[in-house]
Image 1: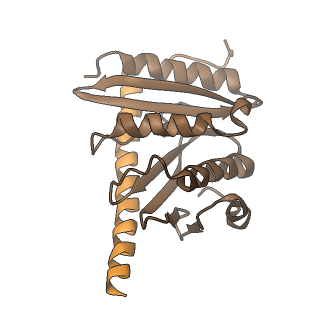
Image 2 (image 1 turned 60 degrees about the horizontal axis):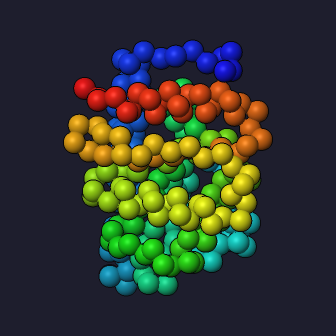
Length: 45
Length: 166
């Protein structure tokens, strides 16, 4: 085992997972908005 | 923002890929399906800097037999590692209930990659968050200097996710 590895507590892990999920939701919302805009522009063209 | 060489990517990618001001990658398939791909740095999930890979098609149209789509995604991942190195983290979004299908398709595609053997891949499958099954993977070059640490941290994450999450 790499000596730099230090285990995290369940609370730390849960916080990391929930933070990740929030960021992921933002990322997919951003991508979704861009793709929607592209479809709209294509329809208008 | 992740740096990718778009000109080099497009030499390999069957579909023409553009990059916008946020660094997100966009392309459209021969079937008119538009795709967006993003790489976002996340240090918390792995307790190590990793780029989260996100892929979306707005129409939610599956294209499992579109080889050009597969090869475009693989070209993007190859360019990610070429330009950036590091760790790729892919945790499937769960909003549409298609995460299992998407995850297995991604794995199937990656397993056809001609340089697959250069990478270590670890997966998390069917771990429950409440009533939602989750799927994910990390991909890291076998030559990465911190490979052992990265895999230990991923294993720690996988072990945590396998427990019921409050």
